[in-house]
Amino acid sequence: MPKRTTIERAQKDKAEGKAPTTQAGEFVREEIEDIRQGKHGARSPQQAIAIGLSKARRAGVRLPPPKKGTTSEATRRRAKKDLEKGRSGGQTKPSAKRSRTQLEVLRRESQDAASSPALAKQAKRAAIRRRARGAMTGSSHRHEL
Image (cartoon, rainbow, N blue to C red; front, side):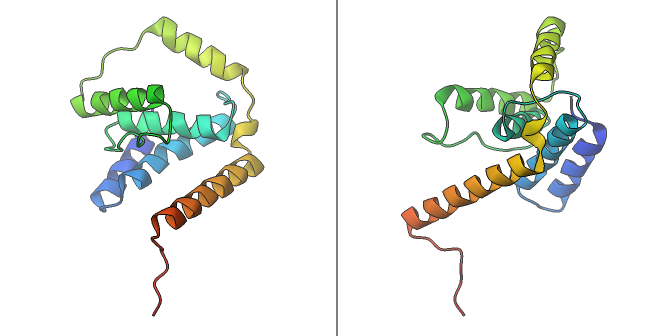
């Protein structure tokens, strides 16, 4: 369950007209902080980001599921379900057994996923992928004056 302050920051971003990805960034930031504080771990920075995005969708951020071909079909299905859960607003009580088991599994994972070098490496890889995608479509973000 996300913290109230995180939800408020995301709502403030929405009120300012910022993109859903920016709003979701607040939840990812919270997830990274949770890992750094030792509340639980993650296998990789990508997993930490995925958990944050899932929380954002469930909290009502209108973040669309990933496009076909970018992730597995299971991931897209899960993202759709999270998005629907966030839109419906009605929160059902999660299974205590499932929640406990999920947290126990995450606690066994390392906190290295939220380290500065790991996040820097992930950010660099993501930037390279973005650049390559931009080159394939022929669009450039640079505007010549």
